[in-house]
Image (cartoon, rainbow, N blue to C red):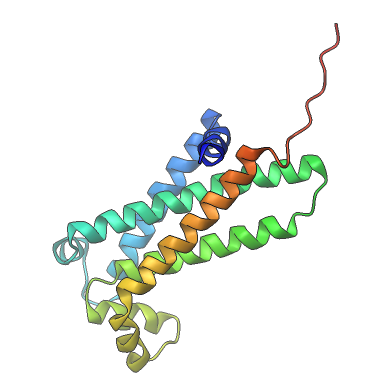
Length: 174
């Protein structure tokens, strides 16, 4: 677990990366929260705050932070792979998997009521019958998305922390 901690700290070393992490986490939370507000007719910010439980808000916040961490870790991993001239394809694959999982988990976590699920998934062309069936498994889908995103964070941070792709440093001239 030290490799994971080292990898996360290495990817958040600069102020720029910390700012990217915070901006992405805040922006993704705002997007996750506002999707039902603007996607469901008759919904407002006040109504959305009233129907969301504190656990829903915490889940959205956690997914937003995981999403920001995935992005920052993938930036560091991409920088390392580019410096080592390694293949970028595995990096893009894990980045897209982690981002997709956290986005889908956030989408399901925002749906606090059945009309929200039908309205949100209707935007993507999913029928009401399928939406209600998916609503039965909402907690499992969100948990699965959190697990997948956390696994991507752990694997990427371990790779960065382990130093399997170190950026070569140029020696200083005396």
